[in-house]
Amino acid sequence: MILLSTLVFFGLLLVGLDVGFSMILAALIGMTLRVGPGVDPVMAPLTLASNVDSAALITVPLFVLAGEIMNKGGVTRRLIDWSAAMVGHMRGSLSQVSVITNLIMAGISGSAVADATATGSVLIPEMKKEGYKPGYAAAVIGAGAMLGPILPPSIPMILYAVMANLSILRLFLAGVVPALLLCAGYMAICAIVARRRNYRARERATWNERALVTRTSIWALLMPLLIIGGIRSGLITDTEAAGMICVYALIIGLFVYGDLKLRDLGGVFYDAGRTAAVILFLLAAAGPFAWLLSESHIATAISQSILGVSDNPLIVLLVVNVMLLAVGMILEPLPALVMFVPTLLPIQAQLGIDPIHFAAVVIINLMIGMMHPPVGLLVFVTSAVGRVPIWSVAIEILPFLGWSIAVLVLISTFPVLTIGLPNLLM
Image (tube, rainbow, N blue to C red; front, side):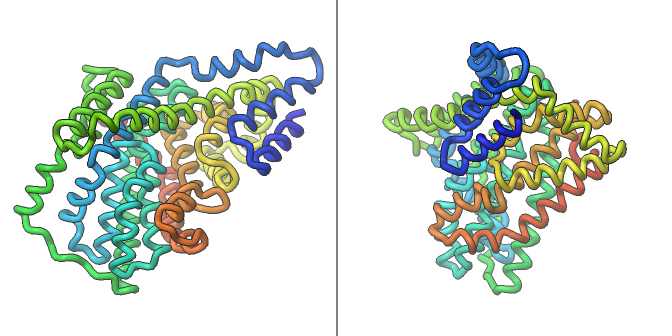
């Protein structure tokens, strides 16, 4: 029955049906053909509703809205200017600027696709003009945008925290060091490639120029600090922080930078609502499928199979990583997250692995899936934004993918890289 539901799910995906509807239909078929006592049809809508019945999920549309406002309010251009002033003198200057800009954008939108679209539309054409290979230009943007869901505010982290009943702030903090490691490696790769291909550097900005561009960009640069600082201080909750950032973003876009007009707000709210609806519908759609897995004890069987490999937490984490890297080849991160987290949580609990460490490993693993085919969401997005052949982006992104996997191994082996900062600050 579960095998049939799984085959139906992947079959529907292959014919082009949306992931959420595919999960719902596959679960309904499984419920109908379930061996033993019949399933009351009301379980389908009940499980759909129960999966999104959490006050913490209010933060999802709010953070999405804040990101949309900031992206449409002139933030991207100012962050690019600030990054250029700070690292534009380094070898392969525009590629370095791309990585740093995406690192900062990650602390604003929390969405890899939004960051790739916003920065790629500006920087990929610029890199092409300066002689960068088109595939490499798109790959740099794709790798940098992958930082979006790892740094706070991160939509995948919020979803995981809700499903596993974890502290959102602790999980946010757990992504900071891995994101900085990824960023440092990406910048080193950019420097090596620039040296080999003779990509030039720009003139070093003067301290006066840096001070000027920092003054104009400071409102955007403060946003991640306001989110973490506000929640950490205890003055506001996660939800209140998300609402506050929306107001902050509106004030900046409308009155400080002035790039956002009142007439634009309708489109901004529409885009944010559509994005948030897709995320929450996906989480709701996983409800019936997760219930079916639970009732069929499939999650228990998978957990026991993985635990049967070894009782060493490090070995088990390695097995989980290999499994999730394979999953990332066929599923996008959010569907994979909502489908596999309920299965993996018993493994973490039984072995006594720190839940924050385990969550960070799972999330970063699934985010890496956006960088490689056949799904490779960021490969497709940057290819479309930069009008570059997909295969050339997929080839050029391989060094960044290799470093991402190396960081995954590091954080799996040394938990302090993920739990050190949360434990220090909290």
